[in-house]
Length: 182
Image (cartoon, rainbow, N blue to C red):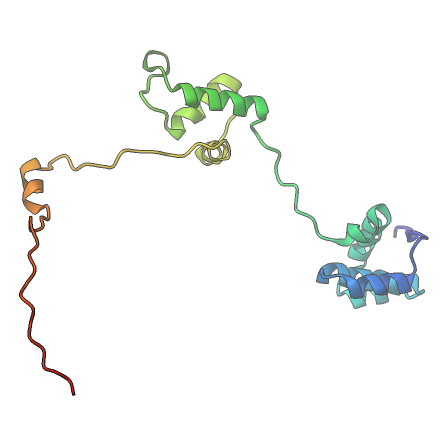
């Protein structure tokens, strides 16, 4: 069993209860009330019961509170995986998209995501998905633009027959006689 960790000395139970009452973050308030029980001399098992967690979680809260104070008890955003593309990669990607492909070198006449994925791997030996490339291009300000599709068997003469036309000149009709209202 590990030794108990002391709470920082610049707070007491009353301070934590006031902070818990003032906070708008429910999870932080629950954690502050749990630690207030410890400050007031309660057992850590009682504090864990108040917080609705186990002893290890209370220990983790104590470590976070000691390191960063009450703000350490607010849940932050999880760090996630590090980005595969750095700023140099993004700059090169933007340049290659802006300049467009050279058919003799790149073997394509327009960039597709799968082509850019292959180019990034050949150039930097970084393996990324098409989704990642799409997200990076969107973050760089690029948008997918494509031509409107046209059916291969489209008949130009049939199109003219189906176009709506309007009368060339509008004429006023004669005024209708209305019954007088009395």
